[in-house]
Image 1 (cartoon, one colour):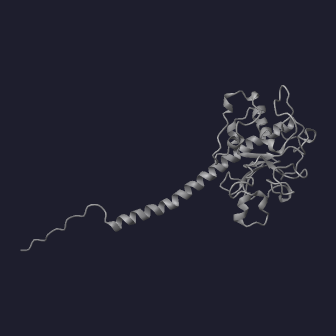
Image 2 (cartoon, helix red, strand yellow):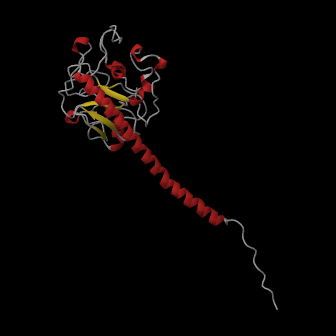
Image 3 (cartoon, one colour):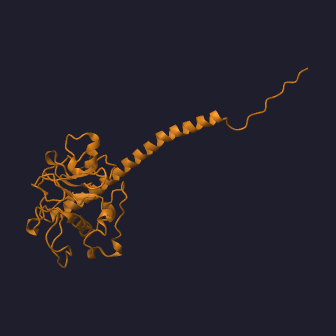
Length: 258
């Protein structure tokens, strides 16, 4: 009688089986991670839209008390300690800060959650002693329509209550022209997709920008040509950037990320 010798039971996985498991896990990660990142981007985009809606309400309230005008820096007085002198197109961040001072808005509203920007702590000082953000490049994720018609204060404080519905009041930060893949002056309405990204804000991975219109709506735009008559919201009609608007319907949102 011959005894059948039992084969010893294998312990663990063979190399082929292990590689198969690893390949499946990598495949699943390749599916799940992009889905997670896309979901986070959509959530951040939604939060960004809510920020702009809240800021838009403050802008409308301010306009109703200021003859329909956008907020702007004014000459130094006891109750408005802003910068003295001419209105400058690079001083729009101080005009935006006016909303924080006037309506006690949280500085957190001015930070897009999809960026590395951080909420301004105001150095622990009372709001009424501050005139602008501690560091606009770190504490401000949005650009506002330049409220000044020219360099003189008498021509400043442009009205927007009577603006056309497609006139843009605020949007994700103007990307400017100086950093890699940022050149708002090099795009046109017919630019190919990859080149069009040069003109999009950096807030949402160059996919586009959230835009606050004069009629109060907030929408995500795939390119910057969404102003009146498809105007580029980040440049003037003269294809300049750090400048005053060329006409009442001309969008030029400032500051820039430069």
